[in-house]
Amino acid sequence: MLGYSREEADESAFWMELIIEAELLKAQKVEPLLVEAVELRRIMASSRISASRALKNSKSTNGNRDSKLTSNRAIAIGNRQ
Image 1: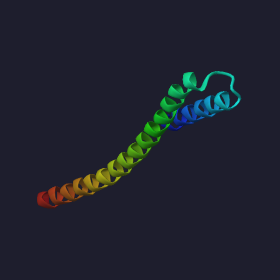
Image 2: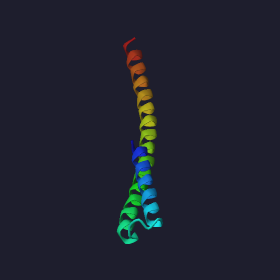
Image 3: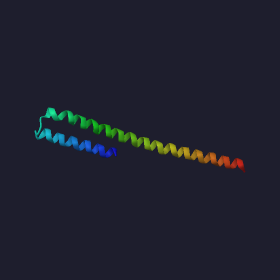
Image 4: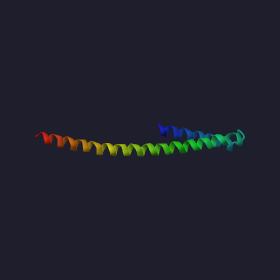
């Protein structure tokens, strides 16, 4: 989802750059929007990286938790016998 948002911001920046270069509108009217599109693109890229890292950390943490639960179950079963 963040990837799509980043692509849309990127495309918006492209079109605004084209509008400026073709002099379809005054640059001073378009540049604030272009700056915002670039900022949004950076935010989305950073958020995607953070989400990816969090997902990796979550998977490794859950793996450790699952192995601990398995160990605790084995100990509990061993104590019953």
